Length: 116
Image (cartoon, rainbow, N blue to C red; front, side, top):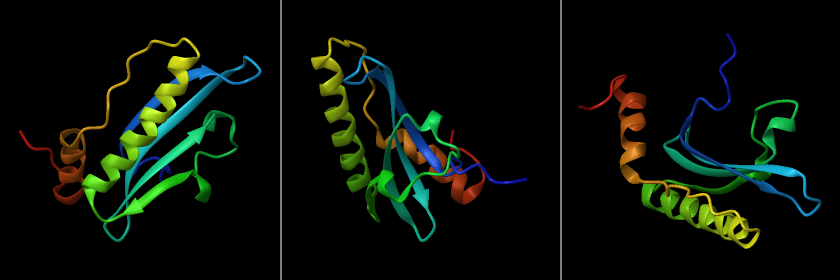
């Protein structure tokens, strides 16, 4: 069975708005763990229209070894997109990425179980 390319994602936010032409647009922002102990933050616009769920190289806005740096990059990206949505009149609330939500999947990644 082919591994789904989103399997390494530890957290994800999906924002829905409209583009300049008034057509619905979906923005997906995620934090994933890559081989080599690398954290990555990705951002893709309308990935549902792509022929594959494999992220493109230019989807990544951050790669690094520190979890706090990944959280900062992800939340900065999220804030920018939420700001645009608010300018368009969208008042939906979006949760920021939190360290605790990444620790449980990280523990499963290493130990195959979640903490209590």
